[in-house]
Length: 142
Image (cartoon, rainbow, N blue to C red; front, side, top):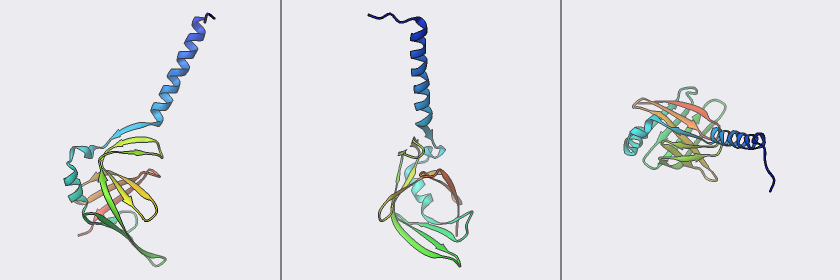
């Protein structure tokens, strides 16, 4: 049996602690303020027509089970309709985290897109596109 010095044991435990702290910082846990709102209320607030606050040509329309994205400018025009659902938590891959808030899971033809509902009210919607972390702000059209 090999005896270890106090110094060697200290280094070993120090390295383990640093490793655990590193892992904990990569896999963060977030809780949205929206979690205190029932999912049916979030769904009813979401239904409607939303225009991007950054690009007036970008309009999203949420119905009960489908969402449509319209883009209309001089350079390009498209319309996309996909199914979606609201879930109450999701594991994000990039950046790695467990998001405990309402998220929109959008099913496109060949892939799934994930948006965290960061904020929602009668007139404003803020989504976080989870693959890039980009904030998307919308204003309700009447």
